[in-house]
Image 1 (cartoon, helix red, strand yellow):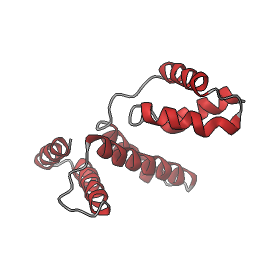
Image 2 (cartoon, rainbow, N blue to C red):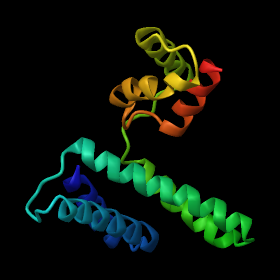
Image 3 (cartoon, one colour):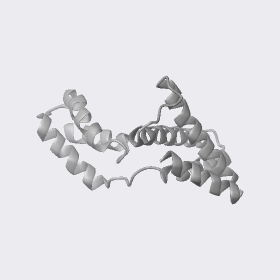
Amino acid sequence: MIEKIQEDLIEAQKAKDELKVSTLRLLLGAIKNYAIAKESTSYNPSEEEIVGVVQKEIKQRKESIESYKAGGRQELADKESKELEILQAYLPEQMSEEEIRKLVEAAISETGAASMQDMGKVMGVLSLTLKGKADMGVVSGIVKEKLQ
């Protein structure tokens, strides 16, 4: 996956797409920082770990968009939105809400969850299955809805 990002960076440089170049450089930097945090510059993160870094970057963009809109800075929110679109291309195909609901129901019956106190158990099961395939914020909302 790192190779794909690097190839896309080179293509963006040739096309003089400054926004894509800066976004991909930031992403590669975040991946490198993740590897350094694992205490090895030669460490090769797995695809799952890279997806985690991409998701973290996407989450940051979404938070920035909200902040900029609240502060009346629409031009910055638009820039963050474009970066968000670029980053989302590196995520695996996301599951539909209907598919997530089915998995939530299965996890609830599997864990025997009956109330909000059991949410941690349900989310633990779901996080293994859905990591990288769904927005965990959406998953959490569905679990809360089902457990109330």
